[in-house]
Image 1: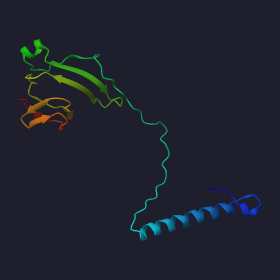
Image 2 (image 1 turned 90 degrees about the horizontal axis):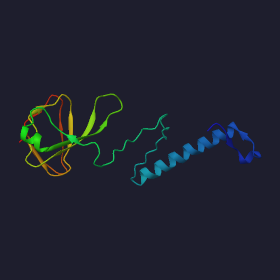
Image 3 (image 1 turned 90 degrees about the vertical axis):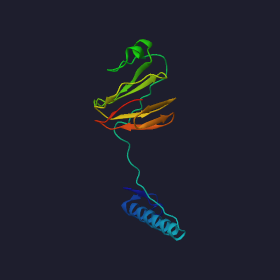
Image 4 (image 1 turned 30 degrees about the vertical axis):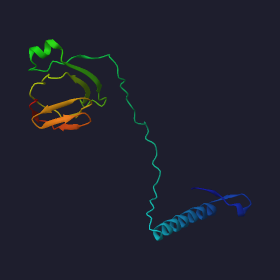
Length: 155
């Protein structure tokens, strides 16, 4: 507070009034904190943060049939390729230029993704069904993470 209204000084704004308001606010804060502590409560006072110059964006990718294509990773069997048992849809490439991206995969029952290693980290959420690799079975609702440089054999 730079200035405050001093109602006892016929409506004139004075720096003394501002100091009095700041002092009263500090005293009130101390009294509330002491009362809360006496009651066994913990009270946190936080300073309000200013909004960022540019607010963070939200990127929404709607569900729908658009954008799906056949997924044909290196080593995929000709049988699985010809049957179209794997489909992929690129959802997002991170706009920061990091090279990270998000995809949605549909892998039909009994299709087998080839054994592979990861040149970057992989974050996976199983939305429906199950998927197995040599680390075990993951079911709908499970999340798993493969570190950069890791490899796994799919069952």
